[in-house]
Image 1: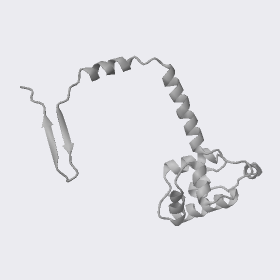
Image 2: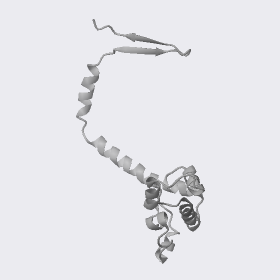
Image 3: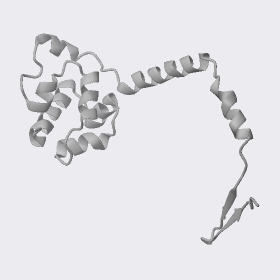
Length: 145
């Protein structure tokens, strides 16, 4: 089980090491600044999503150290050299991936679009609901007699 106070202390140690404010750190990993504030205050426990985002942006941070305090931070001299390198925000990677997927999908022929168009044409309206600003409504049904 993760101890919230100890986790908050390790998180603050990371912020000091990378010389980041809580909001800059939040932007770097792609979360809301309030999420960092809630973790540091002990209001929330770290989610798996949060821990994985930290690990994907700051790969030199050991998950064992971040979660349980096992090991040291930074663990080697190589880790201190990483301090001068700006982390790659998760959002940029997600945007690039989404754009690549969109390009691939647009290049593939869409056979299902003609089937969808045929089903749309065969559809008919069965009821219409009109909502008025005074809170009343009127429902119109099509008689299928």
